[in-house]
Image (tube, rainbow, N blue to C red; front, side, top):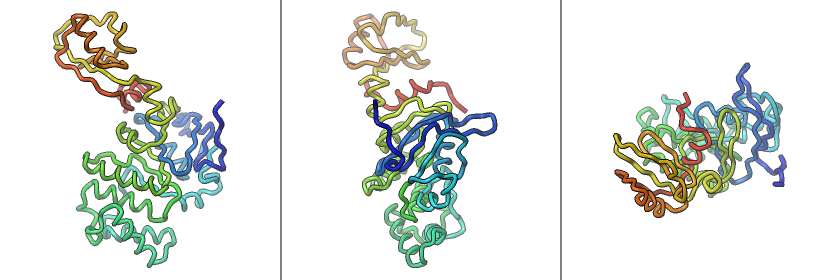
Length: 314
C-alpha cells in the first residue's frame, strides 16, 4: 500500500476536503498532497471544483468538511499567517490601472510590510524577471494582455512566497504570450518556488505540472504525473481518420487487432493504438479508404476527455 504523506512534510495536506454552498457540494471529499518544490495542477472542466479548492487553500473560503493544512497550519485558525506566505495570481488581472507598472508592485510590497527601499528594489527585480523593465513608468491600461498577466505574476512574487497559487494563469492569451508566461513559471520552479495551478489547457498542464489531479463534479477521478496518466488511461498513439461526409462506413470489428479502443466523432474516427502505422495499414486492408489520416502521440487531452466526457459544461 502506498505510504500516506504526513502533514508536516507536505506544503498542502488535504483529506476528505469538502466545500458546500447551501445544498450544492462543489468539492466532494478529496485527498491530495503538494510537496516542496513541485508544480501541482488541478485539471478539470468548468464547475469541477478547481477554483473552490484553490480558494480554500488561499484561506479566502472556509472549509465545509474534512481537513486541510497549508504550510503546516490550519486555515481556520492561522489564515492571516498563511496568506502572508502565499503568492496569489487570480484568474482576473485585478491591477490598479491608475498607477504605473512599477508602482503596482511597489504598493503591493508595502501591503506586505516591506520597507520603502526594499519594496522599490523588489519591484525592479521582478520587472526584470518578467521582462517589463522598459515599461516600468508606463500606465497599466495600454499594456497587452500578456504583459498584464506577467505583471500579475510579478505582483504575486513580491513577498517571496513559500507557495505560489495560480488560477488559470494564461487564459485569454495568444500563443506567444502563453509561452513566455510558461517560461517564467518554469524558471520559478527551477529556483525552488512551489506552485499550485488550475488550468483547462491540456498542453499547459503537460508543460508545467510535475503532478496533477483531474477533477470532475467535485471529485478527483485520476491523479499522477502527466506521463503516468497518459500511460494509464490512453495508448501510445492515436490514429485520426476522416471519411467523406456522405460515406456509409461500417466500423464493426474495427478494433480487432488494430486498436484498443475506437471513438466515433461527428467529424472523425479515433483509433487508440500502440502502433499507428500498423493500424492505418489494417484499415486499408479492411477496404476502408479515409479522406485523410493522422498518427499522433496520445496527450493529456485524450485522458481528460476519456475521464470527463466530451459534453460541453457551462
